[in-house]
Amino acid sequence: QLLSYGRNRQRCEEVRVRKVNKKKVALSAPELAPAKRDWYLGLSATELVQRLGSGALSSETIVGMYCQQAHSCDKRFNCSTQDCFSQAMEAARAADRHLRDTGSTLGPLHGLPVSVSECFDIRGTD
Image (cartoon, rainbow, N blue to C red):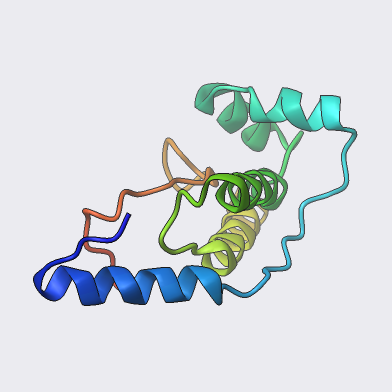
């Protein structure tokens, strides 16, 4: 998994150290029966946005479920280099407040979680 040459070796070793020392993140998704949680996780982005707009689901609930799922997969497969769960939960709460206060969404993917490949530069990440 580690590249063994040049400056990439140092970066990869730093990533590996961060992975080993990664803190546990408190995720505030509601406790749902596994079948219901799996049903929600199986919904399309369109269906999730419809449920967000109608108030049937909150962004905080959706993002929390996806963060829990991502954390579970990462523990099993070691598939991410950095998580942004805290920032995602803050953004979800802000999206919920915006919808509650204005009655409008922030855009077509309002309140949905997104995972971005490390090949893209994102401010505040490694």
